[in-house]
Image (tube, rainbow, N blue to C red; front, side, top):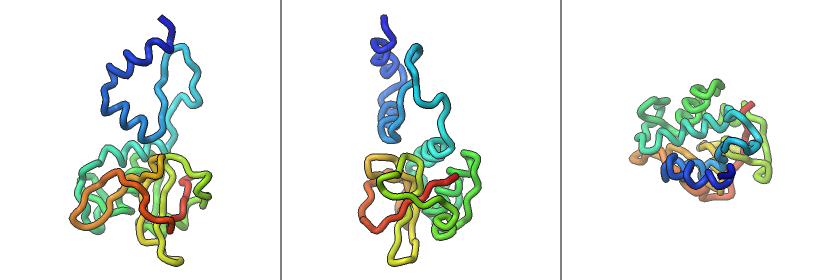
Length: 157
């Protein structure tokens, strides 16, 4: 059996949820005998996976986890667990990132929502024009399509 023929059985053992998460973050499956672009997950990918693991956690203004979050609290918590310290607010986080174009964005980058020059919301880019975020009071951490063109992107380094 070749390495490529083993992929379906590996997928079956990993489970549907793992495959869906992998697809959402744009990841790949490491198959013995096949080369891969990276042998370990990057800090940004780790942060993205941590945010995704908080799916369903309730929104609470000012909360930084581990059970409740506001938008910047989720990004702060996720990157801290991945090994990188971020400032507390969305605007402060925007000022600490390397600003990139939408064409350069990749999974794990931060997405900053703005009105004019004021940043008011942040999430973690998951690929396919979607973000993991803690949207608002009465809601929960979730994966959602980016709903506006008034966004800026930042890469945590």
